[in-house]
Image 1 (cartoon, rainbow, N blue to C red):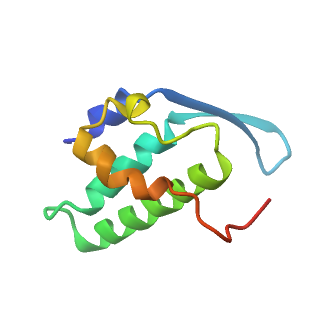
Image 2 (image 1 turned 180 degrees about the vertical axis):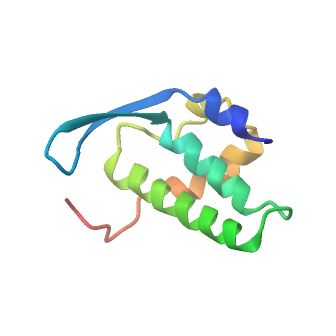
Length: 105
């Protein structure tokens, strides 16, 4: 599938979460900035099913807001997102703008 190589070439994002038993669980996933930009790109593809495009757009917006408001150690930096085409990076930039009134943990 077109665009999957972007996720494969993204730096790994590692975190530790707590599972439902209270145990730590290690999470390794693609960089959330790359993932959100990829989902936004998918949401704008005319050859994608309408329902999937809506879901992709909502997921991109949610992850972009999480990065902007809570994962501030991951700034939106075009150099760090160089595995993506420039037009994908440019179109995704608004996803990572810090929102006023975001819920605080």
